[in-house]
Image (cartoon, rainbow, N blue to C red; front, side, top):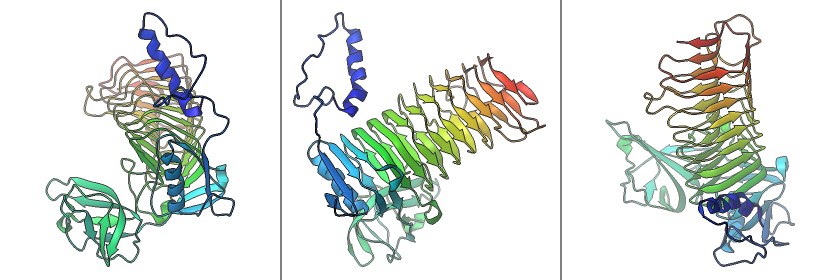
Amino acid sequence: MNTLALAVLPLVIGLSSVLAVDPPPIKQVRQTSGDTVVQPDWAERLTITVGPGEEAAIRGSTDKALQAAVDYAARFGGGTVRILAGTYKLRNAVYLASHVRLVGEGEKTVLIKEPSATTTLAADSDWFDQEITLADASAFQLGDGVCLRAKEPGTGRLTVLKRTLVARTGNRFKLDKALRENVWRIQGGTVSTLFPILSGEFIEDVAIEDLVLDGNREHNDELDGNYAGCVFLQDCNRITMRGVHARNYHGDGLSWQICHDVLVDHCISEGHSGLGLHPGSGSQRPIMRDNVLRNNNIGLFFCWGVKHGLAENNQIIGNKVGVSVGHHDTDNLITNNTITGSKEAGILFRPERGADFAGHRNRVETNTLRDNGGDTGAAIDIQGGTESIHITGNTIEDTRGTAKRSGVREGAETKDIVVQGNTIRGFAQEVEKR
């Protein structure tokens, strides 16, 4: 049975618990039409290689070669795209496909985003249009991934659209999809060559393994993790990221929005202006294990409504905030992590807009937190109306000398905070209750 199928089989078999009698065991596996969960363990599977050398089946070192390989595997229902050693320069995202596994050669396989360019609009485009006109098109090419941004006068509402340039006459470009939003000059509309390195929407059973994703931060404008990152996924299921080194994106490292059963294992996410790991709004059951999250704005950010997640055995080092939990993030377990050198807080429970919106019933167990927070900060800072947080069996220490720091800080509106069985030392107050 293939790796992706094995990942989801327990979910399916678990349904048998609602039956009065267990179904018969599977003794002889055959490939049946439409069955993507239980499959034979085939000795050989479709694999396509891509790379700069003659040994590659698809030869090239751009996003176009990588996309061709993904599309080839997807055409036949899935398979493995093996990205050979080399540096691949991207002018657009590589769009992933269901049942396709992307595998590199570790640090020898580097996908790097080309420097971004930005210009203003030379003409207005309405929501029903499928074209734009650029004030300066000298840095733009057909096939480029672009981001259109405009701010609505009065309300300040920001429109952000991601598209690809597919045809042109001079400064006038056709887009791959209609706008469906107004992009006007009075809104300060701009167009930038900004995009995720790897992207996927409405796909399932995908693996990304053993490669480097470089966001080239110093030569790119910022695009936040609700739209991009080294990896950006939207409305996906059963995604595995293993052995991925995501670095230097002017935004997020690994971001997934409304994606369920995502596994991030033995990855490095570092040097991003945004978030190292961003389990995004509505994402259920993320597992983030044995990763290094280093020198980001926030190491691990639980977005809105992230539930039943596991953050285990991660090294979370030198971020502004180590772990952030907030809006409707409930029933998550943060355990056996080492969190050090966070500038504001090791673990932050955000205040949100009152108790109805806070992140409740989360557990913080057997972690090591060392030297986190500013001079008047806290290693674990529980704010707003957060309720039912269990902090047990952790080692929480500060070795930086005299300051007004607290080991655990409980805000005035918090409730049912359990702090027990921890080793807390080196603070002005072990547990501060406001």
